[in-house]
Length: 383
Image (cartoon, one colour):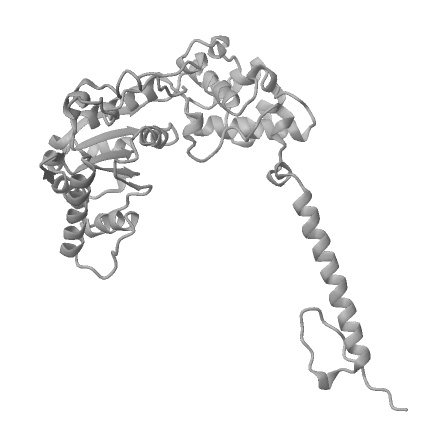
């Protein structure tokens, strides 16, 4: 009897009937069944695995409900330092006066974007808004296209004038319908060219019978403030209403920031960080919240990996070393004292001009800087 040469089976490769016999089909079916069973078991085990294992750290190990020190902008863990509150108050006042443009600037990583997002949270849903996380615009049409993109409106294939007319029509219609100007938040605004800034100035001229049609909030690096001092920016600078700079945290505020983030995640700071570890990280990060986040989360990961329950000096030093940050040999013990605003964790009442008293003219309410009626005055925001 002649024996047919068997064709080796390759998973994932379909074989033609002419190439195989009945035995080959049986072998192929068994292999596929085995692979399917393994895949099913793997998927089931992944479904049973807790989410914290996927993230690498079980935060309940530290008594927390969620991950602290998140790298993304997290308004829920906003830390009310004096500098951040000053910047927030400047935006509130600028919106109450209907300033055409308000500027928040500061060094990278200090929390400028967080201030703008925290303010947006307190706006009434009726207030229209456009948020551009990266305001790169060399030409006016780049800015106009970005606005239309966020509004989910056509922006491709239009000339600059068509883009301008489309944006103008939308802003005027939105102001008439809602009674509020459209809030335009431009992050990374230092990348706006002089031509784009001039386009913003012209958009600020739009008004309806109810008032201005647009309120622009610029969030930028300090370089933008410097460029606005140039003679070429004179007309735009005249439209700038209030402005504020978000400063670096002091060592004491940095320590309070670390504690606040732990508390905002459901943990107890004294059980998560040693006093000395907090002081080391607070001193080494130079008052930059972004660096504080990175150093603290890395120290917690190292602690969890070692099976310890609390971040100590060794874990803090190791995290700083991995990030290339130099620890202060003689840290200031006062840096860890709870003397700053955020450590008290008291609610901070934010006046909001968009909330109007019943039967009271909206303009009077906005000018007074109040957030609403006496019935609404108890609404607070956690620090």
